[in-house]
Image 1: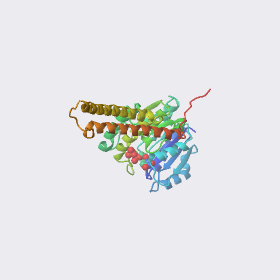
Image 2 (image 1 turned 180 degrees about the horizontal axis):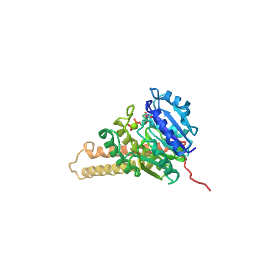
Image 3 (image 1 turned 120 degrees about the vertical axis):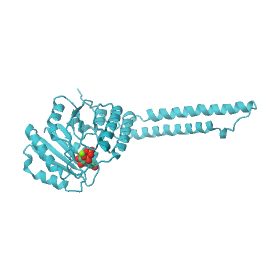
Image 4 (image 1 turned 90 degrees about the horizontal axis):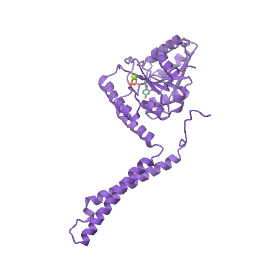
Length: 321
Ligand code: UDP
Ligand code: MG
């Protein structure tokens, strides 16, 4: 099979028939064999009935397969993508929002970039965006600038819903929590470094409403920090906690020796000196030593946890001869 189109959706009943029809038209024109996997993320409207109906429809043409996965409740876009990736079988996997904001007309070119230009992943870039400028476009620019710096991936629109992957990529990365915003970063960390970008058409939302509010940016930043930290120290937490903890302890230790020595010197020479217990440096030193120990211990515990992780020796092997 050439293409798997994965469509995560939450309450998008009105858009679905148009989307399916459009995808079928594009596929037919380009003679692709394909499947559309809709992942219904706990919709409370008739989305699932629509998908069932579409599956029965012969209008899809002989070469298209309609598949669907229906969650019991709403788990989020990442969960939907995870299940879609697991089910996908096409050589090229395309993800696409269900709200008709992404255009299926982009599919042939995305497919070509993966199969002919050898990209592992091609991300869409909504250069001209039809969303609210203040609540979406501007924060999104800031968000992408940060993401570029942290991840080192030069994408303008990391969180674009329209993306294409080689099948191998989606089978070897695990999207979870809300990490769908950083799939290119997950792919890069898994060793799939040929990441490309294509300017894609974006359209206004015709039906329904957006499912993400402004809190996406707060959560997005936190998730970015998590991923960065995990990538850098996830396999060897002691390299971070051990170093910072030891340094703090060492500084505190030296400082407390200085405080003690000064007091002893003053006593020996009968000089007037502050009580050690009221000396602020004494308290700062003690605090540094305690925090240093705690950090060291946190790193040590993390190492013990990792030792027991079932994935501690999971490596992606590209080739063996
Ligand atoms: N979506 C989903 N689960 C959710 C929220 C959203 O599957 O919990 C789907 C939604 O139906 C749409 C896509 O994710 O197909 C993108 O959502 P939306 O269009 O609301 O995002 P925006 O375009 O506003 O960034
Ligand atoms: Mg949308």
